[in-house]
Image (tube, rainbow, N blue to C red):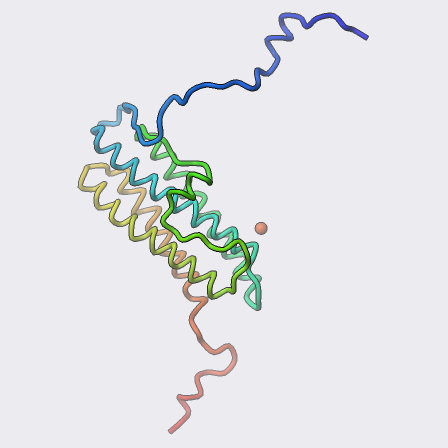
Length: 201
Ligand SMILES: [Fe+2]
């Protein structure tokens, strides 16, 4: 058995684990970024987008919770729909987070921090009935849509066209479309017989 000490080459190739250091940028700050937007504008957009990011991460995770925990006669279509919407929200999460970084800000990222920031009510850990799951999702979408529209107007006023475009073209349109697909599941229409009240004289 070879017990000779490691060579210099071996030491260079060894992973340097357990390292520590200070943050290089504080959450809430913005660093200079040469994109022809004033610091105040970039800070306002980054702050707004971080609130939207916390709420979008929460809505995304609410979809995965409901994808796993859904039950009843509509299990299969809702199981698939909830996961499709999870994937679309996940794409929005990345778009929002990377926009914050390119504005010079710092994106909120970890679930404990997101939980402190989000405006979406926390659901129970256990399972809920389908109409309750859908009501939660619709409420969460409405929180996101309301804030996204206000943020889009603010970004347009400040000349931050990229943020305005992200909010309108991606966030608002995706959320509106998802609301339609989810809301139609709580229309109380007959499954077999048409409304018999129409037959009465
Ligand atoms: Fe799955």
